[in-house]
Structure formats: C-alpha cells, structure tokens
Length: 240
Image (tube, rainbow, N blue to C red; front, side, top):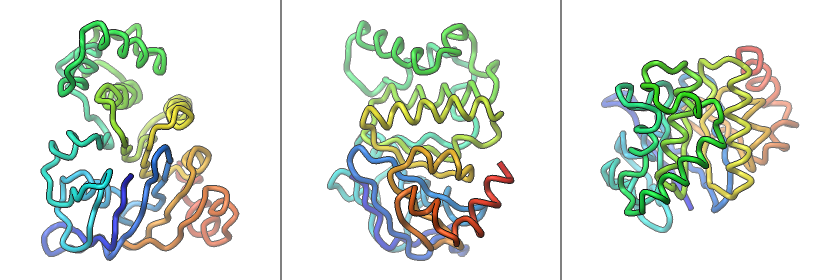
C-alpha cells in the first residue's frame, strides 16, 4: 500500500533523512521506533506532503505521491494524525467529527451512524459530544483527532506519537482502539517512542537512528533483539 524508497529530506540546509526505505502493506500495522531527533516525525511529514523529499520516491496505493500537495494526498486516502492538538478547538466534539467527513458524499444518516461507531470506540467522548474541543483534556483531544481521521474513511492512517504526553491509563485506551482497528484490517503506520505498547500491536517495526533505518523486523523479532533492548527499548520504556 505504501512504499518509501531511499528518501532524503530535511529542513532547508539541515538534512534529517538519509535514504530511508519502508513499506506498509494492506491491512498491516507498522511501527517506527526511535528516540527524539531520529527522524520519525520528519519521515511522516514527508510522506504526508508537509515536507518535500529531496531524493527517493514515495508511492501510495500504486500512485506516485511524492510531489502532491497535502490535501491531494488526503484525497487519495492517506490521513496523518499529528502529534499534540490537531482538532478544531473552537468546534464541538460533534462538529469535529462531522468535519472529518467533509470530503465524502454520503447521507446524514450514514454520517450519524459512523459517529455512533466512533463513540463506541471512544466512550468517554459520548458525554462530551456538545463540548468545544478546547475544553477537552489532552487525552480526549487525541481520541477526538483519531476519531475525526476515521470519519474520513482512510485507506492508511498515520499516527505521530499517539501516546506523547498522555497519562498511562489514557495510553492504554488509545492503544486498545489501535488494536481494534488493526483487527478490523485497517492499515496503520505509527511513529512512537513508547516501544512497549507499539510493539504489542504491530505486524512489523523499523528502528530509526540518525535519519537512517538501522533495524527492521516483526514486533517479536525486535523485542528479542539484544541491540533493540539495550539501545532502544530499555531507554524508551523507562522514559515513558
């Protein structure tokens, strides 16, 4: 579904990605692991069109998307849920969910049914449905952002640091939903520092360091890797 080949990118003269390649298959959950500054967010921003790659290629669903504007990439079914607050803070929970479906031509009844489905995934949003997003906690806003993305019916959803800044119980709730989406067959790409949770839900994982892919394998293979345990997982789990 997604194929990134030898991609280089950065910010002006500052080079961050140095020839990264990865793939996300249909119905597959893939995780990008790495500490701060290893290039995870830059890679995701490059895939979603917010940064232009200086070399390499990016294909999604058989299309070259490397030079497309972000809204065009969204139109092809690739949705990026950014780290932090990414909802419309002045709009209510209900309005935010409605806005997630603004590109789709479907009936109000169908939209209503889909919102009900989102509220089943995130029950705590049910009682907040009329509340402005600005009044939600950080965890509730993260849930709303994922729900809004799901309303767009993505072929691939990209989550950038979904656990960042959240309380452990909220992280559990978010990853329970990710596990449910995986079981339903949604393709998901996750950039994450919280290695323990991410590895539990992934089919495959890549470990990034200094803008390069240094390890690749299934979640179980990387969990059992001495290099990952010593250099990444131990540090990341203690920091989480």
